[in-house]
Amino acid sequence: MTLPLHERIRSEIEASILSGTLLPGARLPTEQQLMQQYGCARMTVNKALSALAAAGLIDRRKRAGSFVARPKVHSMVLDVPDLEQEVAQRGQAYRFNLIRRTVRIPHPDRPDEVQLAGSGALLAIEGVHHADDAPLAFEERLVSLNAVPDIADQAFDTASPGAWLLKHVPWTEAETRIAAVPADHLTAMRLKIAVAAACLLVERRTWRGEEGITLVRQQFVGSAYDMMARFGSARSTTGQS
Image 1 (cartoon, rainbow, N blue to C red):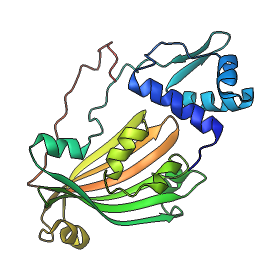
Image 2: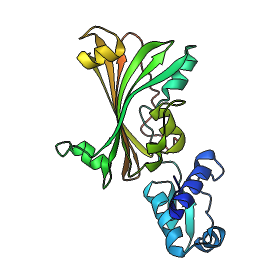
Image 3: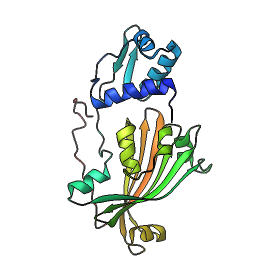
Image 4: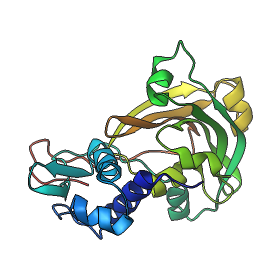
């Protein structure tokens, strides 16, 4: 998929920020310099920088220019994990089995879906994460194609949807809900456990600025997974990334 030029500019600057090539507080090239670099109009550059600012990745200052945003002075209670890495760290072999993927419009009676989709459609994904060939988690995920158009071309044969998103789409805010639930019939079938067996439910939403990225529901085999969070003082003045 060929990206529009403003999206390519945004993506390349975003990649430089995430890789550490551009550090917090660093000044970006001026609009004039970017126009010369990409051979485009000011409007194209402005659109790219506006998207980066909306995502919280840069600060635009009148008459001063654009700068890489500094980390906010707060931390997530739980980070967004990469299950493949977690499984590998436990010394187990990881595999993701894609069951179903469809593109659909948000359900009109689901405000969370409508909000996530924005003016576009949703990619709906179902799959199972495995550890040593045993089912670990059943995943149901929605991704905004308005925010992440490139994900429509991914086969997920070498990486799970979550791992792909973590690598390619930065998030600036996440909300996580954790609960203990009994397995319903579908979850029991996917995880090869008894109906009503104990599961750990993790529901997570992520945003890039004001734009929703993904809404995921993962149900883990209760006896096979736990979560740990490291807490810092709410009064800390040291930024967390």
